[in-house]
Length: 89
Image (cartoon, rainbow, N blue to C red; front, top):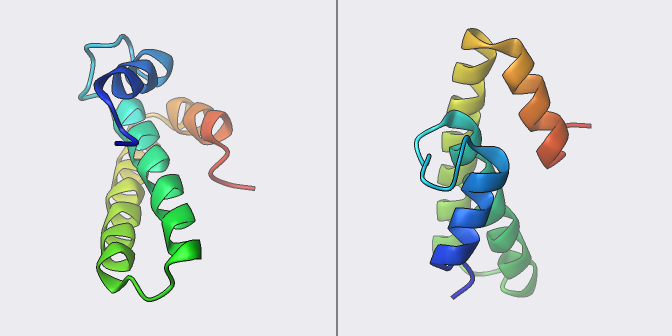
């Protein structure tokens, strides 16, 4: 399994307010980014896996909506998470 409990705690500790803070927008965006990167690598090897492709598109949409929420509420937090994760140019 690529996403163990320890990996999730590490992601939330690094990008959230703590390892138990699973609800913050930054933590969720970081988790989605980790999952998106994993699915992208899987799809490079398995081009015809359409179920995974659909899951990837749904995850990207969820991350986009969280990023939209974050840019409306706090632009500085948005810029910080974008820079940390390297999502934009």
